[in-house]
Length: 460
Image (cartoon, rainbow, N blue to C red; front, side):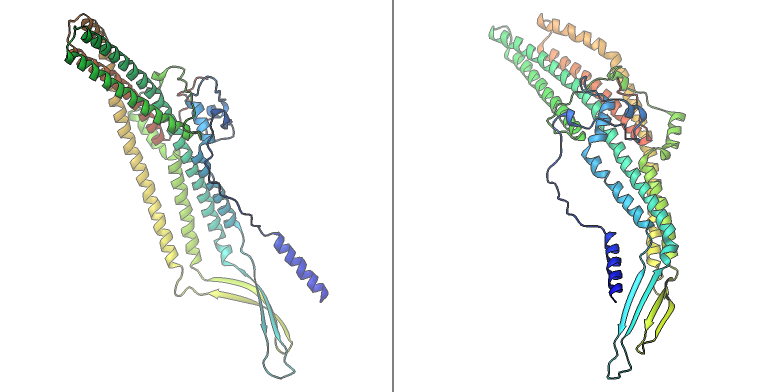
């Protein structure tokens, strides 16, 4: 009896040693944003999902950040990516769960006789069983969990791609908006100079009140445009700093591409080249690959649910002592008869989910192809408009120089000069906006086609 107690204690300790323990984890209520670029993670060599030139290139902070460096910083430090990547741990846990075998089932029983018959004793029973159906469905469960883990990994990768493309777009937008700030400031200074000349002339009696008023109004409009350009640039820089895990007020120096901003104006693909890119899109875009893996996981789930509809049973052995103190030992089988349920509801839901995923995948492909053709068309129209505008701008610049001389000599009135000056400014601003649109459309097209060009923006 003493030995059995010792054996019981040893078995209990062995079982408890394999149990997980609970430790509370405190929820942090503060945002973790860095206040300087130097505080960010700078080594992207371990991120194998990035193109090799990005992983092998170093991040140098002294000469400003180019497009490739910003991408590396975003992948390493973006707060949203840090949260999304935690999904990978859940996927691995689900994969472990799918591969585990079911625990054996232990049953204990006692039958206490009622009465005064001294020949009767308490009956005992002990049984040990195992569910065999879980073995039949284990392969399907593991296959579904493996595909599901792959789908989650690809979903995380797609989020990373989104961050990369958003970083590229904000970098290009910031470059162009900085030029817009400089242009509006230059325009404001010119209009301010014109107004001061007219104000001085009015004080000397050499100008009329309406002439001074036109110059003042033009100056105020120029100042409004300057402030608006600065506001838009500030919004873009705030978005870019937050994308890198930095506080919004952090100074973020940017550097130009080695070949200049014009190197980012890329001719859109057409015809056969576009068709080839669209054909291979489903093998490059992580979201489409994730949908494909999710569909394959659901296929395995459908197979698992179909296997589950068959009669489930468990086997084991019982050791019993009846009230007559006779011990018996024998096998048992528990059989579940699928007469009323038959797992038909779960099978129907699994098949419906598989049908939905199939339709979603087809819809995503169709939408991407349609949007790609639209972007190519818009980008080509913007390029044609930009070239037409750039052909006319030199003559317009020369004309404005002559108009300023004519205004100073009194050969043109203020209304005519102001009208032409505003038109000239609008055309120069339009040039910058067209270039910005073309650059952003190129990034959007890369996102749709599943491309990550590594040459743009690099200068080291």
